[in-house]
Image (tube, rainbow over all chains, first blue to last red; front, top):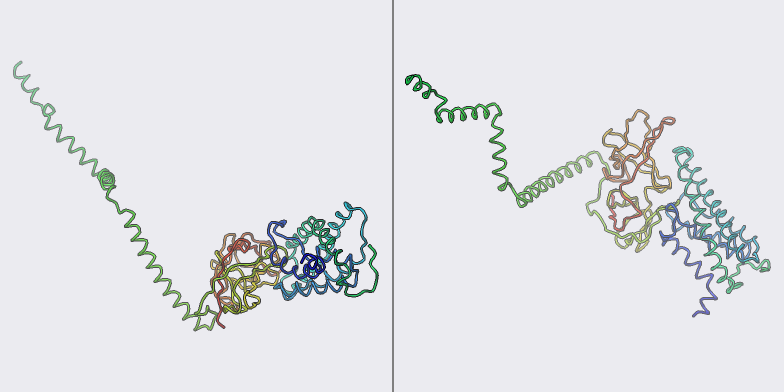
Amino acid sequence: MEKYFNKHFSLISFLFIPIIYFWDPNWIEFFGVQPYWPLFWLLPWSMIYGSIDGLIVGLFLGLVLDSITPESGFTQIPGLVICGIWFGKLSFSSNKIISHFRYGFICSIASFFCGTLYFSQILIKNFSVDGIYLYFPSLSNIFSNVFVTGLFAPLFCSILLSLFRRSKGRYMIFDLKKVNI
Amino acid sequence: MVDIRRISTNRWWHRKKNWGLLIFLLFLIFVRISKGSLYKDLYFLISKPFWPGQFQREVLTKSFEQESFIKLKQLEKDNKRLRELLSLQRLSDSESISATVISRKTGSWWRQIVLNKGAKDGVEVGSFVVGPGGLLGRVNNTSLYTSSVTLLTSPESKVGIWIERVQSHGLLVGLGNNMPKVIFYNKEIEIEVGDFVLSSPASTLLPPNIPIGIIQSVDAELKAQKTANLLLLAKPQAIDWVQILKVSI
């Protein structure tokens, strides 16, 4: 059972992202805002499997998350796809401490990017209706999300990275390039 | 000398009876001037142990509640009849479904709650959800066993509101934070902090007069509209039980 779990951990963990997204534990929050969970999974996956796999998985993640959130007019796909590509281009650091801080920093930037893209969609949609100035107070969501995602990224990303490495190669979608770790 | 002494002992103030009469007369004058206040206070003290007790208070409260209930029923009936005459939205007669909140996202951009009742239990898309305090949001989609509710704070949410005091309509817009904005497309409107906000009687999506919130602050006027921040009465981050109410179309 353990062997099976280790082998298929990537797939199992992917299936659990929506569950964690629904659960959204309120003890991990900053000003009522929780971390952007999909990034914790996308970063280690893309770093191991590369940009193209990152793009595809980012697209899948976006599709799943868009279907479980009620906002039909906005999408998370562009942010996750671009982050998937970017994460795939990143290399591993040999220094464990630096790499931990790096995960936090990268996830913060990615969270800022995804949040800004989402906010832009809200502004564009409501530009002519209510006036965009109304929505500026909700910018605090982006900054809270950046902080809390960056804070927990070193913990979650390093655990997932070590677990993904065990099943590395098994779920590679496109074997276009060799992964050098 | 003897005669003089006799006269002096026969003066009126030398008689106790006369003093008694005088005091009684003064007392009557005091009662007259004070309009019987002494008697009233005395009656207050004497009758205090015999006042209507807890039991009588309960009887009166119950009677008052029954009276209010009858009045409310009558008003509801009138309201229903008038709304039918005006062809406005109303609650369906089958009324509400109780549900538990099984997931909540009340921070960030995505503001929804997931309930443990779905299509199998008769929940329909477009039904609205109320919790302790008032309106929470509308059912956005349903699965077999669950339903997702878009909260009033979601950037997707826009509902018509009504302010009773100034008899005016507005639009409640969710911004993705905990304080949605109310937009009035009339600069002349005199809204004040503390005004109660209800669902609009003219709304085609919601039934009328459901409490939503209280105006917390009024923004500076801009262009042709006036805006205000709304403090919601129902707190989705703390509510565990809600009611799903159907709207008949």
